[in-house]
Image 1 (cartoon, helix red, strand yellow):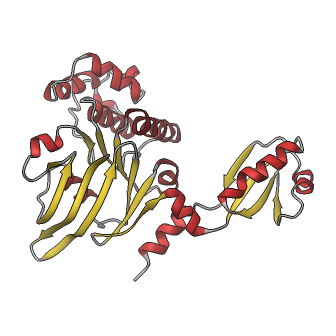
Image 2 (tube, one colour):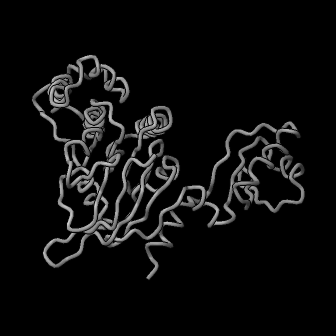
Image 3 (cartoon, helix red, strand yellow):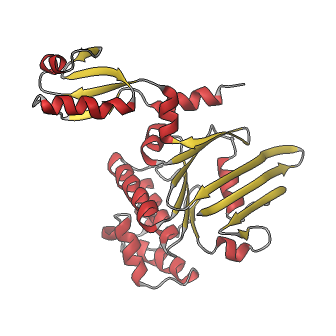
Length: 297
């Protein structure tokens, strides 16, 4: 089901065209990434979706409701975090959540639920002025979740998060999309993280959508990738993988293969009773594809 539909959307500021004829559909149950350089139009498009920035031409509909003609209904099922979260620094995290819960008519029980979801329950009684950037970011996301939204729009949500925080957020957002059938729209400059998080993505440059595709499709276009298999003895692993070209690097055997071959290699190593400790890609495929697209004339 389409959660958001953009039809020939344009945004002009004076004589400058900021968003140029964007047509796009975002479905429920997916994590959708907006990728692009600074000034490409990612945040502007998000603000237009929320009714925070006017639309010069075209139409944006949220579950069939026009953002221009029926703004209240259109945005009623959206939770969002755009840029720095607007928080009350001299109040506790709980009081901040309570204020925003009242604004969206969320029950008090929801405060505990969302604070647990973003692992901030331990700091509910602490004043926000003492929070780190990452804690403020998590509190902002908790506020966005208060109304149990069917669409979640997050602009650079991993800013300030440590590696564990990034992992926890990624796990939660993917779970949110799949289990609750929510459309999650995320912008980020962290391309390796987007590769792990998103189901589909759009690359934006100078206000234009240059590509829209799934992560898997972008991988297929890249062809072979260098995949590392960490094992106890790569020389023994090489015997089990005779017929494949490989390079040995420390405790790893590296093969240039497509994604479809990874299960075959894994099966061969398991059949040879060779323990596999990790399987990683040496190169980030989305990163390579992204730079190919943004550098096209």
